Length: 528
Ligand SMILES: C[S@@+](CC[C@H](N)C(=O)[O-])C[C@H]1O[C@@H](n2cnc3c(N)ncnc32)[C@H](O)[C@@H]1O
Image 1 (cartoon, protein in one colour):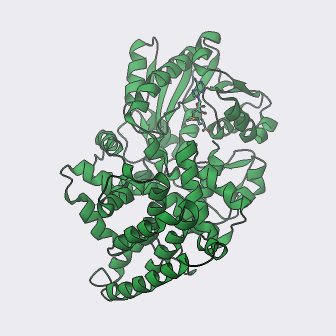
Image 2: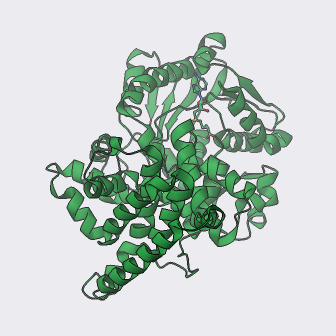
Image 3: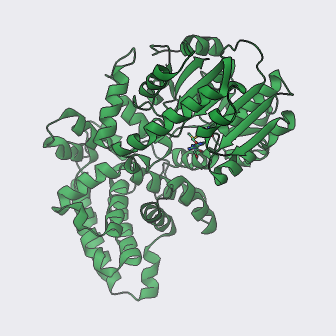
């Protein structure tokens, strides 16, 4: 999966908040209470009841219409959002890789594309919250519902509770979607459930779905739409930081907020002129955020002189390249390189220092190795010694012991630090993933240490702040490693940034979306 594609979708989602009448949105619908004294609009219930009555008449007349006419009921944007949810559920696809090509293929553009994106991604993020509301209203277990019907209901709930779609439009268009996508038999049920949901604003629903939940973590999980095990893990990870876990709700909120698009200007290859709207960021000198525009339209991105990359991901790469090495420093390895964002930055930094240097970008998956090829295409023009290797990183340590001066291990992980950019991922992950990933992470770090010569440096990185993937892996591997010294990554980070990096305990760097505005990247530096 290429980070570029994921971010493109997020950008559209971020900019796409609007209603179906084309008015720019001021924020989530639930915040309207804050705009007006008394919270909920008092006149609304009566008006809504009137609208509901009108809707019911409309719906009845629709069922009597000819099928060709009824086909108009499912508008293309809602249908695309629905098809995305079904594809994500049925084939384990990523929404950010499914929806954008679907929109292109169906020629859904502009506001409709933005609407479909916000609807699909927002519904996926808030699925847990909506499921709790739907279960309350339907008065039955969700497993008893047909999955396509449940998806239609979730889409309706998102329009009613988080988008500025008038209730009558949200209900009638979603009933139309149910009729055309699932079948006429579902329409009445969908209509009834959505009308019940429309009777209350989001804050009221949150009170209702959390009222009977005794434990605070579980309440937070339901209201912030996260699996409880993730909330527990995040609380535990935050507790080990200098600032403690009081800001856990802010982290969960940040997970629900699509990030700005951040570009990397690969050193020696791209400059500010390549990103005319780019704004410098706080931590990484190579990063620029884009306030608007499609990054894919920039020539520098198309030619891979620049790319879309989270600022935290850039920062840990800059730190990994800056950690002091004893002796020569021109033979580098990226052990887990796909899709190649860090490899491209790592390579550009090496090219600036040693144009004759060597960077081996290793990746186990052939498809992802191809993405590394694409990401590093421009870097290879300034670093001919950059090669892409397809192979198991666990074997590199035996095959090439002590061959490298500097090794980056961006280990496969749960990705819990990047939930804000992958709408469905929180529901895909489970505690059991840690049991599979843990041994792999330990083996990869061990291999990296074996592949590093004495005096060289290993950077161990995850885009997860889960302690089982960060501290525990480093501690366990170091117990068995000879001649390995943990470096103070925070001190090196602050040298790279030229300013203090807040909320750090050291010696590892841990970034957070709500504290640093980056993905929750973890970095440990180990010298052989
Ligand atoms: C977190 S991603 C790396 C992201 C990449 N560094 C970037 O910035 O674009 C982890 C990668 O490790 C790869 N991987 C998983 N197991 C591996 C193994 N045994 N050896 C090498 N790579 C592996 C995965 O296919 C995935 O591409």
